[in-house]
Image (cartoon, rainbow over all chains, first blue to last red; front, side):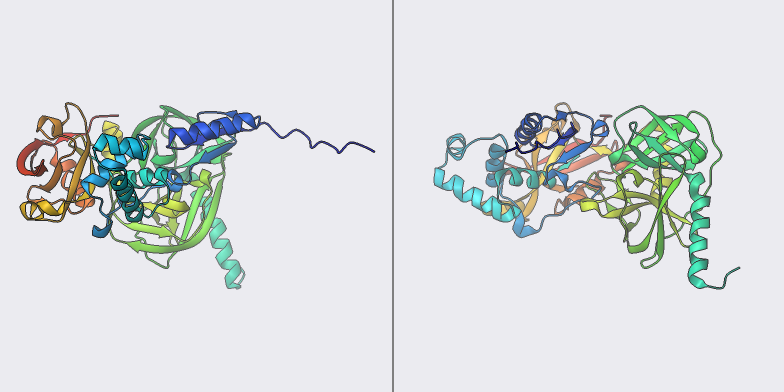
Length: 133
Length: 298
């Protein structure tokens, strides 16, 4: 009985990562290296550019306007800033001196207003609404 | 001469494509990758700013394969225009500007990287009015094309059926193909080439739209404003006494209902002007005055 033929070694690819979230970028980097490929900085030196789906909507775009019912409250923005720092709900409750229940309430409201399902998406979506001037 | 209309149409397209070669340049990014630029003047090439790597020197491949070095002359993320200055003037095809009309045929050209051109045929999907980009630039027309472009073809000229130049191609969100109108390039290019950038009004803040808390509605006199998310140390807003967490209600008496309007109010002609800000802080309404400065080079 003969051994199954091993597939030929895959081509070693140069991959450039474009992810705004540093945690996600680190995760992807580890994956790529583990699979035997190289991570390069400059996209023009890469064979493949890996773009995170939320930051990756990219492209030259018009300024977003937020509908009134989707506007965040100052408290929600505070909660979101803490989420962006990677804090857990418990730490957010402690920092803002509110109950865990209230934190969860704010986060649900944030998700609904921003139309997102994860904390990372919420942070990305909210930053799209920002104007630096 | 054939009388077959389709053949005539095809022959007209090939003739047009051959002629446009002289307005297209490949901007080399690596051995295998390039971007397209459009020759705007004998020694100036215009490209799509968002896709041009942060570099000072580039190698360009012109029609026929001649290689010319170019230096970055300026970039403006606001209008998504970058200008490269060639080391020497070259002969180029000057194309007169045209106005986009929805439904008109459009030809988008790209460089093939070896001195030739590639071409795409489609329609002007939309020719809307002026708009403001998320980076705060004013774009004279909202031109959307009904065609797909390869990454390397971005930045090439887009022509109408009469051979007039609508502008240069650029990618919008989700691969949508937009045109930066000729009028916008012509308006921005002189200052861009002279100064290396386009001066824009600057307060040194990041603003985010926010709902005014119910308890403060009456005092604020409006349901929404913009919250100061961060503030640049020593910037105009910081000097005016603005702090992170403040909610700006009005700029010069105009409610900050839309970010677009705030951006327009602080546009380039505002540099040096004083802006009156009405702000909520800790439940109190304050009046502050900031002097708009030119955005520092980054």
